[in-house]
Image: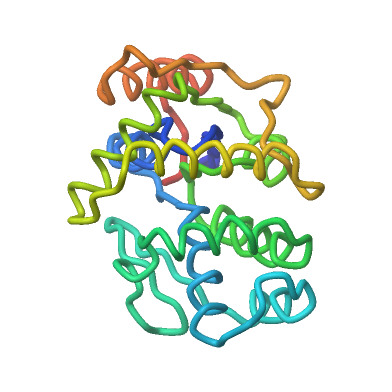
Length: 229
């Protein structure tokens, strides 16, 4: 019987997780699950609904009721049937996502959804607690990191590419604040799982990172034989 595989990629903002995970899923024929997009969708809905981002109870209710779909083979994100792929990528929504993700009720709702997706196919998932909390038994765990200055530069280039130029100092400050929140939150903080492979992408290209992870997948899954996609 074909075995379903989970590749878990964790790490801080700007380390290249999303790009790497998307390309890796395409190479393997796995479903790509962007957990950050799910929290962004909740953050977007909360902003639209005018919910206080400190109201744990209402945010948890909202998350539990959110119908979030990640389309296989594309990067489209649907929230309650609406395509919010572009809407969730603004700095305002990014900050909201970071705040709502600190609440246990929100995370529980998202984790339940992520686990349901992984029951259906082999997946590549990226986020900040995939290998430590969501899938502690994942066959392949990666902690992808990079020098803070390099991560900030990547975020600057990403924002510029989307027509959202930002001040370098502001980006660095925002990233430091995001790192601090993610690492110190009470619920599922950003940590490297004990059995995760650490990859420093500071001086690596995206293709080099993808190839390194592919080698690991092949080593641990008998060259991919018997994997259900």
